[in-house]
Amino acid sequence: MKGKTAKESLTINTEVVLPNDTNHIGNLFGGKLLQWMDVTSAIAAGRHSNRVVVTASINHVSFDNPIKQNSVVTLEAKVSRAFTSSMEVHIDVYVEHRITGEKTKCNEAIFTFVAIDQNGAPLPVPPLIPETEEEIKRYEGALRRRQLSLILAGRMKPHEASELKALFVED
Ligand SMILES: CC(C)(COP(=O)(O)OP(=O)(O)OC[C@H]1O[C@@H](n2cnc3c(N)ncnc32)[C@H](O)[C@@H]1OP(=O)(O)O)[C@@H](O)C(=O)NCCC(=O)NCCS
Image 1 (cartoon, rainbow, N blue to C red):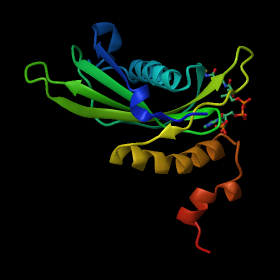
Image 2 (image 1 turned 135 degrees about the horizontal axis):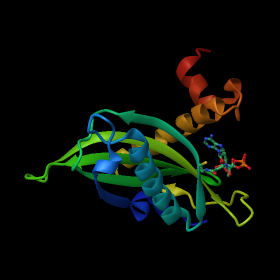
Image 3 (image 1 turned 30 degrees about the vertical axis):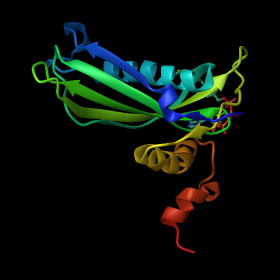
Image 4 (image 1 turned 90 degrees about the vertical axis):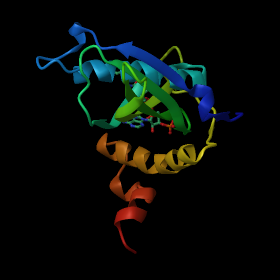
């Protein structure tokens, strides 16, 4: 299958934080942000695979800074690596200053999606071709993160995780 670049899957979604999206202290509710992240990342995975995709796992979510009501929030997602039927997607979240337009990064997360057929069975996806320095770094780390995710999901035995063993276990 012919490879596709990360930028082909780039998905940008801009939202405004409305009163209904906030918690009792006036900040964006974490669950709402996760929903926006899930939808934006799924579109990126769908653009890469041209298939229906489902969320297999959500990892490395960090809520670094609170986001206030009325903020303009931009979510940017790109596929960082594709395996057989699964795709890792990195998503970065920025808050935009209303006057200067300056964007400050406030959150990020890593999602894994699986392309499926009409019966829910996994389908092969194109390989990812990383181009920029950041895309190459994310691509190289993806196998390690995949193994960690599969161990946590009980789908891989720790001794099978070649990449993690290289990090934590001395010969
Ligand atoms: C994700 C799903 C399609 C996997 O189906 P499966 O029959 O278990 O398929 P497999 O074991 O062959 O795994 C398929 C791929 O998913 C990947 N995968 C499964 N669980 C994973 C996890 N927790 N983290 C990362 N990757 C995972 C596998 O590594 C494999 O990737 P590969 O083909 O690139 O090697 C299936 O578990 C599912 O439909 N889950 C529900 C998804 C959903 O409804 N999400 C919405 C939120 S509720």
